[in-house]
Length: 264
Image (cartoon, rainbow, N blue to C red; front, side):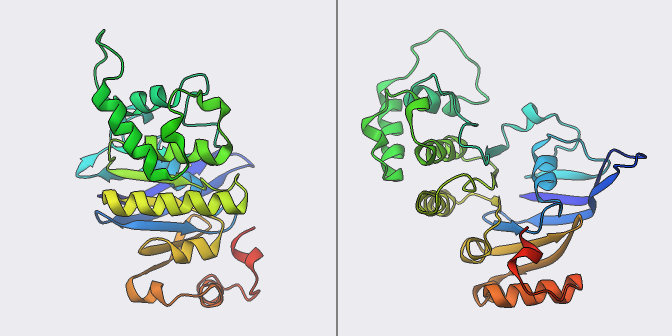
């Protein structure tokens, strides 16, 4: 579903602030893979997601989504392939529009717009059923403006909007980092359920090792612009925080066995 082949990205090339963010990156995701990505600050995690989404043009290499080479496509032309949820709950939805209107925009993404009636009764029922799955009571508040929702409710809605059209690839960019622990756990549970039930291919950046170990079928660890660990299957199921830190120390040559080594 996703092929990243020999991708490199350098910021501020030729200056004193030159930073090699991605170095000859190779990563292939099969359909239905749920990959969690961890690494310290500056490891290249966000640059990787932004390169896939088309935010940054890459210097070398190519990016292929479901057989389509998107390397030269701008961000808006990749929108039909990708759903994305950002760290900030205020992004990804229109605060001055109702919940039902936000869902209608997401549902029509990539379609031509006309002058027909905005939201049909059939669509309203579809949105009601989808909202009910979140378990937040939003199905009874469909005419409420999104700006009045809590951060967790808004992030859950954004997640639903990003997955409504079943994108080829769902990108979760530290999407629970700004939430309190209880709300973050709820949004992660919803994320896992949506990915599994809709059979989506997903890549999630997180700074929480326990979440990275618990979720998905594959975990990738980055360091200084490279993938240094790619763990899946039975090996991932047996992972603990301690064994993951030990693997990091072994591969990266770091002896300090603390969370701060990995997750600044």
